[in-house]
Image (cartoon, rainbow over all chains, first blue to last red; front, side, top):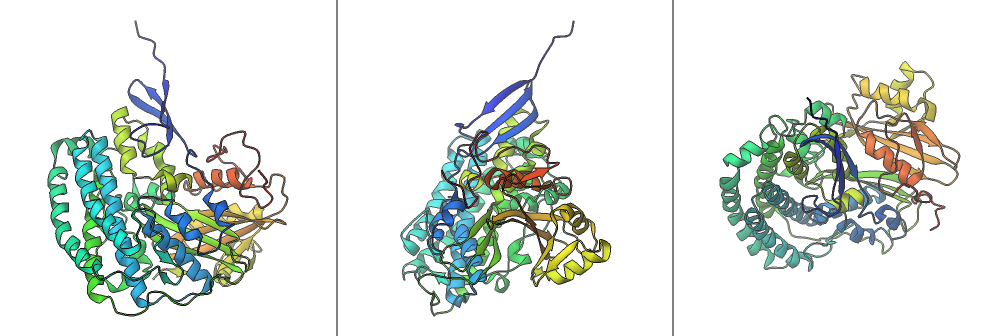
Length: 367
Length: 147
C-alpha cells in the first residue's frame, strides 16, 4: 500500500541565521525537495526613496550608505554620479582616482563577506568567515583613515570626495595591496579545490545566460553564467578606461562559478588599485558646487557596477533643492527575481547555499 | 562606451513598424500611449537592431496631475540603452498591461510600483504588494500620501 504524503509549507526566517538579515522564505517542501518558494520582503523597508524627496541632494548621500550596508562606497558613487549627470557637475581628476580606489577596496570587502558567509552556510562554521573578516577589517581601517567611518562612510560628494587621503593612508594601502594576494591565495587554497565544497556547489543551482538576461540579473551572478558584462568595461565611468583589468566569467552558472567569479574579481580589484596608486595626480579633490545644488528640470540615470550588480539611481529634478523623485535600481532586489527558478527541485540543504551564493543584502532589497 | 540611443531615432523606428505608436520624442526619451506600451516594448525586445534584451528598471513618477512610467532598457550585444516613457491619467487606480511576458525581470519591479505608487499591471501573474503588507492603507510614494 502506498503511503499518502502531502507537501509541507515551512517559513524560513524572518529570523534565521542564513537569510543574511531579516528575510522570509515561504518554502513548500515535498519531503526534503523544494516544490515552490515565495520570498517575503519588506522587514527592513525604511522608505529610502520617500525620505530622499525631503532632503537636499548632498544629504541623500547619507541615506545611500544604509542601502547595501556592506558596500557603502559604491552606493555613494552610484548616487553622486546620477547627481553629477543631472546637474552637469565636473569632477577633478584626483577625486576620480580616490573614488575608484575606495570603490575597489569596498568590492574586495563585500566579496570577502559573500565568500565567508557562503562557507559558513556550507557548514564550515566560523573559521573561514573569521579569515575573511580579518582581511575585511584591514580595509575598514583604511576607510577610517579616509573619512573617519568604517561602514556608513558617506565619503563621496557631488563634485568629488569629502577630503583628501591623509599622508599615512598611502603606505597603509601599499601594505594591504602587497599582502592581499597572499590572503586570497590562502583562502583559495582552503576552498577552491576542497572536496566538500566541490561536492556541495558544483552543478548546484544552475542559472542559464538567457534566463539571467531576461530576468535582469546583473553582477557576479550574471558573469557566472558566462556573460562577459561589466559596467566598468561596457560604460567606463571615473577612470576605469585608464586601467587594465579582466572581467572573470564562469562556465555554467552554478553556485561554484558564482563563488569563483567573486574570488577572481578580488584579484582584479587589486590590480586596479595598484595602477590607480601609480597614476593618481595631485590636485583638487572637489569642484566648487553651490551649497544647495539646484539641478535644472529634467531626469538622469546614473549607474555603477556595485559588488552585487548594476546599482542605478534615477533622479528627477523639478529645479528645487531636493530630488523630486529618487528611484533606486537595486541589484540585490532584482536578482531575487530568479530565486524560484534557482531553488525549485533542490533539497533543503542546497536551498541555503544557493540562496547564500546570490549574495543579497537586505538593506538594499527592502530599501 | 555605452551609447544612449536618441529618442527621436527610436521613435522613428517604432513608427516605421507601428505607425503613430511613438507619440513624441526628444534627445533621450520616447513617449508612447499606455495602450501601446506592450506593443512597443515587444518590438524593442524582438527587433534585431534595437535588441533590448534586458529591462533595467521600471520607475513610476507621480506628477500629481498624471503618473509617468519610465522603462530603462539595455542591449548588451550592441551596448546601448533606450528610455521609453508613458503617461497615465487618473489617480484612483490607473492600470497598464504588464510586460512580464516579455521580460521576467519585470516581475518584482511591477509589484514594487503597485505597492508604492498604486499602478496596477494587468496580466501580471502575482499582482500583490511586495515591500509593505497586504492591507496597508494607500501607496506611500505618491505625492499626496498622508500617514
